[in-house]
Image (cartoon, rainbow, N blue to C red; front, side, top):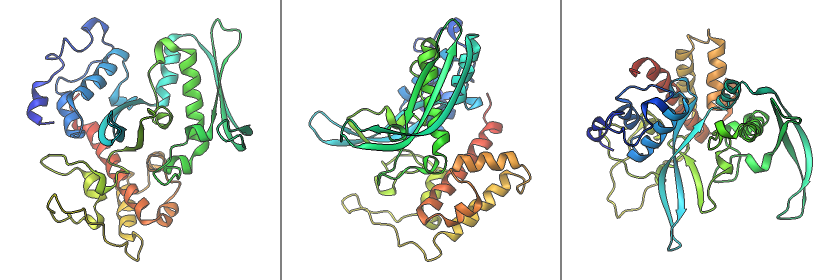
Length: 337
């Protein structure tokens, strides 16, 4: 989307498409459309309108990281039976937002989450499966019994195209599963406030059956699968995803996309050192321990040792997420709200 179009789209110019002033629970800057277009150039105007509509109507504040707009590449099965790729927007909220909304009602009495190992029968195969299961219970004022929700690991785990758990699900499976259980229990207990809201941990379980290969963009998107996007400069994520920071030579449209060069023998040592340098710069040389833990959770790693032992492709993903984290921190100070 061109910057010119977004400059013409302000909250006041779209008054007929957005909630009335009396129904709005949040105030955003008039140029917020322009900020979003720079951050997500591959999305459509309608995606931004839908996202801002939800922010204004619910009061979920993107500045406090309560709500996110995530571009995702999906392969849809069209009416003629062919698979077509398309970039779509998914709006997700932080799991803390569920707790916050429940508390704001004044009706939340108590809640708890626990995880244990269980055995159950897979209805599709008839085989007994041993797995972990998180059970969340939420009690609302006026209820005799709490609402309980059981989240089984195979039903919620997010996997890549090879069927392996993604970074966070691999490093923190219990935490991720407990978030899914709690959010579902909260949504059933407070349907008026939370219906239609999902967290990123739950997304893999609510996709359409005609949708496959769901991939967040641009963190794990393969280079050969990217859709062409016209923009003035490449984003920091696109730059990080290019091997050794070198631009690929332009190729005629009719020629097949060339594969990347073989992985270097050092298995991404240069990427690792760059990632460590970024973490040091964002945490005042490791002095801010809380921020170090926050960054490690953001990139799905437990320690620098785990980062060092990761394979080449994982190191590229880590660097890309660190650059994204750095950009998010910078936007907190640069974007005029």
